[in-house]
Amino acid sequence: MGPTLLPSVRTDRSPHLFLPGGSDHANPGIDVRWEGAYGIGWPVVASDDPEVYENLLLRAAAG
Image (tube, rainbow, N blue to C red; front, side, top):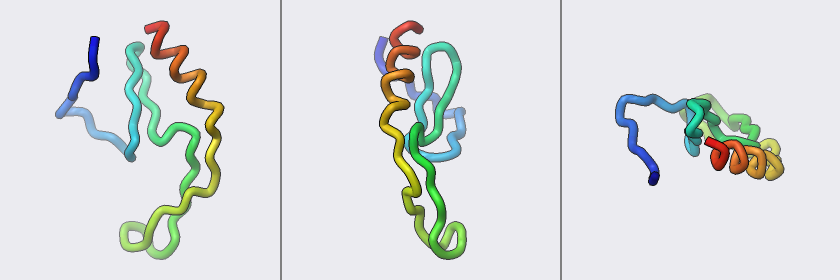
């Protein structure tokens, strides 16, 4: 089964992952802070944890 577009689903951020079990994860492994006024400034990656992806892939594969 390929990716499904869900036009009625609103996301908090991008990228936003939706797993087959119904869970969703916004910006997995990324912590962001804003520089300047929110919505006018820009996001800055405060930390990046690449270890979250293996767990998400295993969960997605398990369905």
